[in-house]
Length: 285
Length: 319
Image (cartoon, rainbow over all chains, first blue to last red; front, side, top):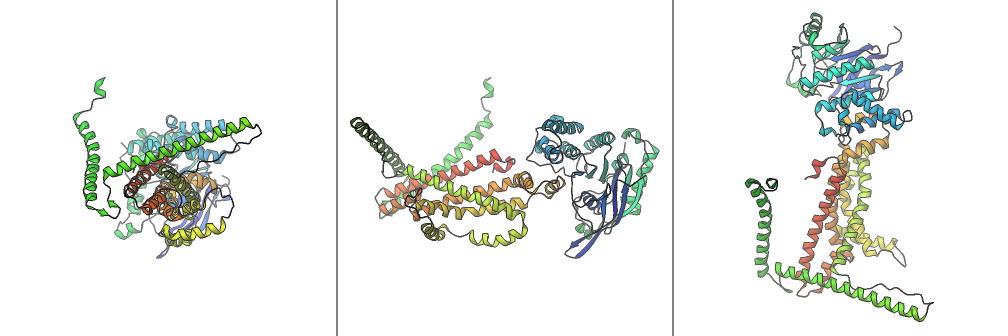
């Protein structure tokens, strides 16, 4: 293997708060290969989003840094497209226009008007949203919005797709649909993906590697689990698969035995993302 | 087929109630007005009741018609005279004189509307960009906000003398295209109605969701694209709230400004009638009061329609 695609190089993060410095991350170090699907899992407030935002360039690490294709990341950019938890579509633009905004920005001067139109429609078709091009976000369901959010990110042709709990706010059925779509798309495009999740099943089903983070403050990588299951993966077949259940067990063990979260009131008040749900353990059957 | 148009009992009751209650309110008000008016004796005679005001409204329409007829007659005479002179002498260059009759009540409404719209548009043209700037920059906001808070509550009557003196000093022209009194009231209107739009725009702009800002950063939108594609649409409902408040204030301020500036509008009409002091004056002023209220209401509805047409957030426009 030559130089890795993406390096999160000994990243630490301290936030200045009125009560003094708060050490959120301590020495997070991770190398990710091209086309790899990596999940970040951990309890609420452990700094998963902070890691993602640093890779996105939305936050700047206190020490250490992120290197993509041998170049340091200093600011946000479309080559590291982000899918936000609450879709973040612009409510005043239609589905098509939301995707178009990014496409125009990335492909200006490289694609003709007709090519752009075709590319936008292609990406919306990939997430099965070609029927709602002219709908506004408030006219479509939560799952559809998230699909459009994914299409917007994909349409920028990113090298790395960053997903911050993309399916966290959706119901279980919709979530399963979108997970299947995401696996399809990943098989087709072979993007590098970093996804934050709270869902153990989601992590095992989708990932090549699961990065498990310790509890904050000063959170870091506790353990990395290689998920060695053949693709394409089928959720129903896997529900009886001993290997799959073994991986699930490992993640659960890490979360609930090694890193058991002691919830007290003070903790909850400090956690910036108090609305985050606790890790979800849905039965696979 | 017919069943589609007939209303069920409950629907019919709802409709009746929705019409009957405002009508009942109005009737009670008219009755109370009538009863109390009979008890108020002023130096200009009895305070006008609804009937008297209705009659004066008719008079004002009549006067307007009479003036228009006079004007039409004047132009007709002038045309005939010119045609005659032209027939006698082909080299004659016809002179067109404008009719210089007294402005009627309706002319004065027109002047008031033009003044308020110009003052308001000018205010909006300044307030929205300023609001965007101080909404985007916290330091600019801290620098300017105290000034806004200080100037916001100033009455139009305090501004007017200053505006008058400044306009007199700077607007010097032998043949002014617009009269000074018009400029005075327009600028006063602008100074008084600019603040709500600045404040609401700034609040709307600074309230742009952090997620949307992050999307804009990931897309690497330029500063101008960011403002026009993200900030402005997102702030639009608040901008409109500000504009509606501003227009309401502009209309209120205008009447006071016209009274003092002697700009030929509704304010001057009220003032002239007050100075005139005939037995009809109070009735005519009441007509003006009702018209002022009606126009203010229509201006607000107009803004609401504009907002529904332009803004993506239709839920905000319903209020």
